[in-house]
Length: 258
Length: 242
Image 1 (cartoon, rainbow over the protein chains, first blue to last red):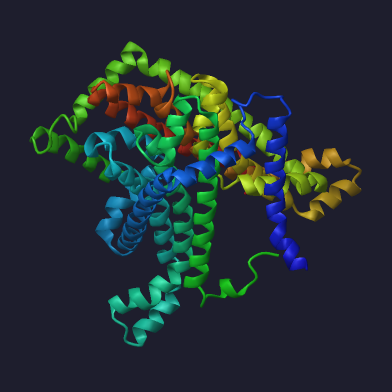
Image 2: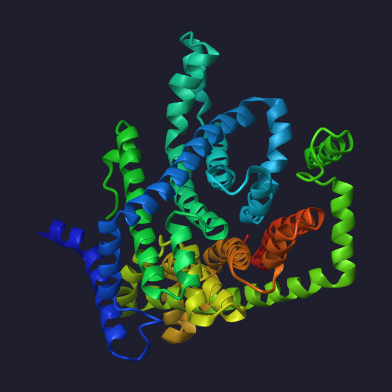
């Protein structure tokens, strides 16, 4: 029973917000333009789902965000290992990473557009550029923190450098790398949406900014609800992947939270 | 010396353009970019738009810090506030705030108001979370000592708990500072009539690429230096803790 309450409790607050939204919009304190009723917005989402617009926009946004995320993940992990193990790579990339990390990368969007045009490649590249930083820094920190005793033991048992990376370093660094990926995934989604807002075209961000230009406020709020749900589902899926990949790790055995 | 690779990158940039390896339409030379940046600076465009951005970012961030810290401390200090606001904060925290750009435009139009509101909404929760965690992690022994010495609850909050919570609040503010730049540039790129982000988009659409590159570099390095400066400042202010 207690577990059931714990599972339901977070949803109650969401339900309360939804209810407050509906009541506030109905109270007449604000015009429907400023805040359409939640039921109106849900009806709109339903209609878009029926006409196929939702699947089309959502699919494109997810495709761009996840393609960018996948590239950022692979390249970021590779680069992180390279910087950790290769002198020259560290000399070159360490300053670039520490300067690039706090920069608002989205400012480079017009340059990327100039180089790659207005289509998917631009948006995906923007996602990669923004999402790669947390992955690289997490991988680098994790790799440098691997216990030396582990490395010594493996070498002593005759592991080659390649085996060492595969069998020892990567698994030992995996928890922190996963944390980096978990930071990068929401960044990928939101950067993709901002790029769509700027560059237009189809996708959740593009649809939202078009709705905004046409003063179609249910359309704008529908976009927010859709993005919030998409983001939530992605974050939860990523947590699942983490639990699956780290099933052998003590962190998974411990209760997630008290 | 550490930043030698950056210098190298700049030299490579200049060289590939001068040698004609890439078209100047795609990548203006670094010297052209510097010249265009200097011109923008002299003619005042950089100052005007920079001032607009600074005002929006500063106002939004300041409001976020004040309200966010107050909310976080209140949640940690009064259980009723926590019970009511806690789940709400948790539900709204992962919501991507840039998605609110079109909504703030619907509410407040194309000017300063919509950007300030966006930055306020986007930056508040990291500060709230920092203040909440910082306040909760304050050692109970300190609170008990102060109480037994006759301090009232609010006195303890101000003199004991708040100083103890400052490092965590400072961490939250650092996240908020970085978010301010991101939200500012995103919203100005998408809908604005002034500001550095607007200037980037405006120059890009006009095909004045050397000037556009200059403003992009200015914005990017402003973000970098703001972070460094902030860390220096916090290190100085919190030196008494170490």
